Image 1 (cartoon, rainbow, N blue to C red):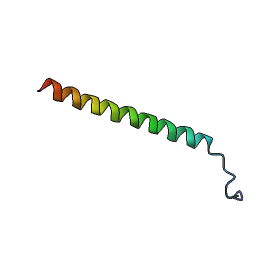
Image 2 (tube, rainbow, N blue to C red):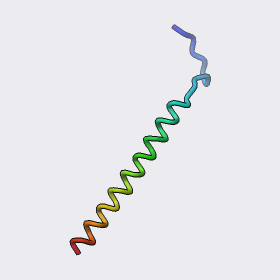
Image 3 (tube, one colour):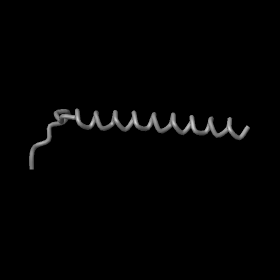
Image 4 (cartoon, one colour):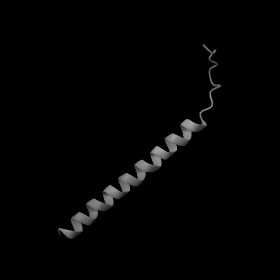
Length: 44
């Protein structure tokens, strides 16, 4: 088993994945809000 050195791990791939998840979440939230507003205007 390799020795672990605290703070030496390369996290670039983890950061890219997290940023992609956040970007996707923002788009889904914005689309959901847009759909709700559209539905409210159509039924008004």
